[in-house]
Length: 249
Image 1 (cartoon, one colour):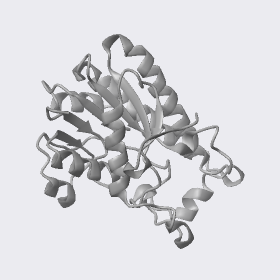
Image 2 (cartoon, rainbow, N blue to C red):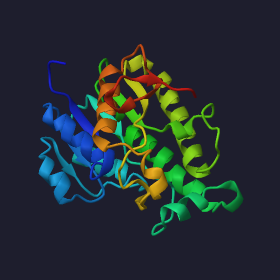
Image 3 (cartoon, rainbow, N blue to C red):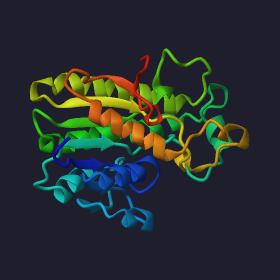
Image 4 (cartoon, rainbow, N blue to C red):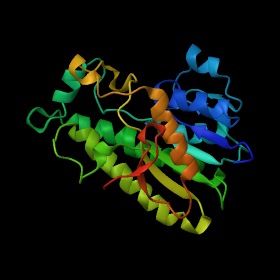
């Protein structure tokens, strides 16, 4: 890596997205941080591309808004980070998980999860793919091991799991179709991180499983750097910056 990369990140105002903005800006990359609404934490990062607000990946208008805001920008890396549990607003962690157990399923969570986690990244990528550099460009989707069929030994979180399985398929499909342009597509699991993901605080007994966001983002950065046409369409664990690991589908 000699030249700074131009990177577009969705869901940049908090959690992994915010931390990616910090780490990539620190190393000299030109980051365009897209989000629904900005905040002092994001403004403090000082991204050198700019903050693009009003970007809700579940809105049909976001494609046009992204193209307008990023007109003329040649993109090295697009990171589809915006995502969610698929929950209705205002629920505790336990209420959210109960709504996604098959026995107590709130059927609406399926459409909610697909809207943000599948339609969102596909909509964003379709909007910006013409601006991603042919020959060297990279598209990364922040996915989850929860989308792995082979790893699902516990059930639960049905809508979230299904949406991540589906976005993995979307990513592999884009990887195949973009081979001709030599644009690599990668799927990365960042791990279980202490962010405000889902909007509810996990129960105390679960907190020990959640790791600091810094390591999670470091793993995503390593996955971005390692992604190439040789590994396009792959699914890896960022592994908290301690060495990428391949994951089962």
